[in-house]
Image 1 (cartoon, rainbow, N blue to C red):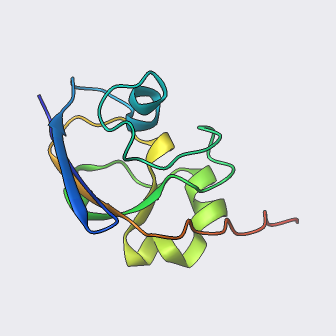
Image 2 (cartoon, rainbow, N blue to C red):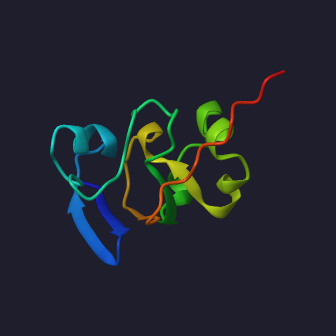
Length: 108
């Protein structure tokens, strides 16, 4: 079972989740990391769930188009949209005190 460590507001919250878990879905049904994870829409639009990945980033899939559109250069700083990730390995995350503002969608 993957171990998840979430840093937020000066505290570290730790727990285990089943493989192939989405942390926003788990928080929505009031399982770990509820109530510590901030999230909003769950669809990659609002960016409220954005976290910096401190450990385990190398095992995550490449950012999808929603993450690229909403996070842009913040991806290079280690930010990911947690609603878009399914956890299959140990991971350590940090969520900023203030939610990130999503970048405006790019219009061709």
